[in-house]
Length: 213
Image (cartoon, rainbow, N blue to C red; front, side, top):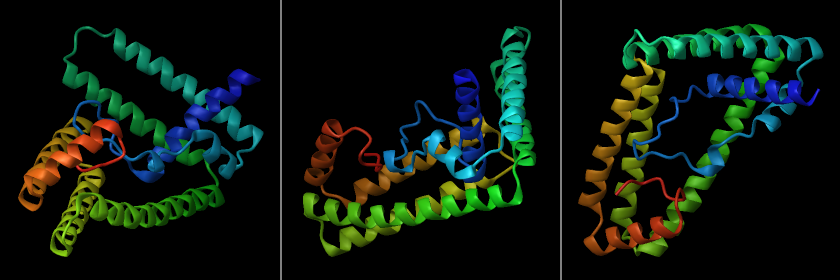
C-alpha cells in the first residue's frame, strides 16, 4: 500500500507541472525558483482527492512511463539530442494521459490552486522588493527600474515556457540567454557597492534571491 501511495504522489507531481506549464528543470543555467514556488506533491494530491480507481490508473501510467524511459536509456545508437527529444515526447504523452484521468472538477481545482499560488507569489514579491530596497539602500529610481526589469523578464520567460514549437533543450538555452541579459541589466542599474553586497547576501542565503549578478 505504501508503495502505491508513493507512486501516486510521484505521478501527481507530473500533473502539477503540466498545469503550471513549467520549464523542465535546469541544473546549470543559473536559475533557481524560490522555495515558496515549489509545490509538495502530497499536498496537491490531497486537493485533487483522487478516487481509488484514479489512483490505480495513475500507478499503471507511471509504471508504463518508467518502462519506456528505461528502454530509451538503453538505446546507445542515438545522439544525446535525440534522446532528450524523445524523453520530452514521452513526458508530453504522459501528461496528456494524466489529464484524461482527471475530472472537470479536479482540473478546475488545479487551476484554482495555480491562481492561489500566483497571488501568494505576487504578495511575496512585494515584500521581497521592499526588503531589498532597504538592505541595498536603493533609490526610488533604482527600485522602479529593477521592478520593471523583473516584470519584463517574467513575461519573456512565460513566452518561452508556452512556446510549443521549442524543445526542452531549446527552452533551456533561451532561458540561459535571458538570465545573462538580466545580469547585464542589473549591472546597469546597481552601483558596484550594491552589486557586491547582493553577492554577499546570495552566498549566505542560497536560493533566496532570484536576481543573477
